[in-house]
Length: 161
Figure (cartoon, rainbow, N blue to C red):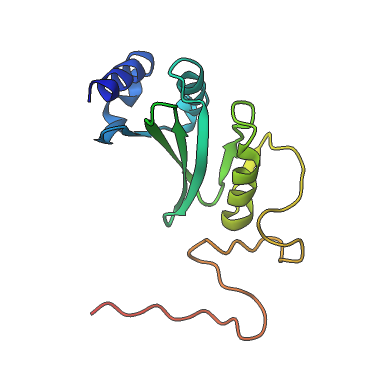
C-alpha cells in the first residue's frame, strides 16, 4: 500500500486539517471527508498535482439533516479517491466542479433534480434525469419526499419491534 500511503502523506502535507479525515479502505481506495473550506482546493490538488483526472460519478445521499455528495475521482493506475462533503439539507448549496471536470454537468443536474441540491456556477440547462413535466420542488430521492396528487398519501413507517 505504498501508493496509498504516499497519496495520504501528500494530502496531509497540503491539507493538515484533513489528517484525521482520510481513510485507506483497501488497496487503491481512499476516502476523504472535506468541508466547503477546503473542497475546491482539494479537488484542484487531486486533479492537477496527484493526477486524479477522471470524475467517475457523483453519489448523492440523504442522511437526514444533511445531504452528502461523494465525488469519485480516479487516476489511470486504478486508484480512486472518494471525496465526501456534506451540506445542511435546509440549505443544500454546493459549488460546481465543471471547471475541472466538464462531464460533471450531468451528475450535478442529477443531484439537483433528485435531491434538491443548489449547484452554484452550473450554467442553465435542461433538467436531468426527470422530465420537464415533473413538478418543480419535488425531489424523489429525499427520504421525506412523498408524491403529490391522487393516491399519494405518505406510507406510514414501520414500527420498531
